Image (cartoon, rainbow, N blue to C red; front, top):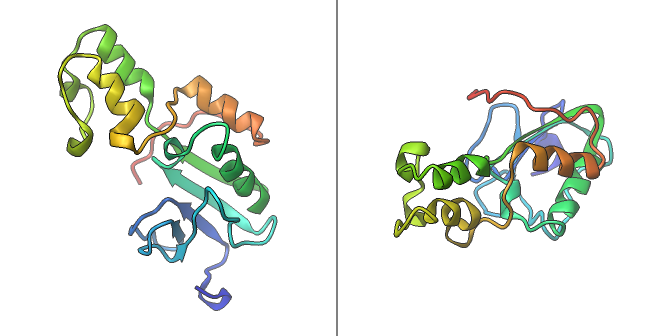
Length: 165
């Protein structure tokens, strides 16, 4: 992608895979995104303070904390304009922990990514969200996510109800 293909204001979706949100630049390690970038090891290909909005859903849990997750967040902060917005969605691990404690059948709790789900006992609700067949490297609840974002330098960090759009 070259600068002529960028839409302004610049809005980026990280970890987008092959999804293309209209008006957004998709960035992913796969070759399916508009920009291929290994965010654990590469800088975001944008100038400082040049991005209006950043969105990523089910992305941060694929990075270990503190590194490389802190590096990824520092890159987001670097490119985000002052008063820019970053929206983050991560799986809430507390749902799976409650399922374990209450011995609820796991598939009733939330939709399941079948390739990562192996039920032998109720502890597998924790194994599922914690490891996701080797894909996940960090678990979040609201308190943890807000603390990590604040520590990374983001301000006005708060929960927002999920918006499917």
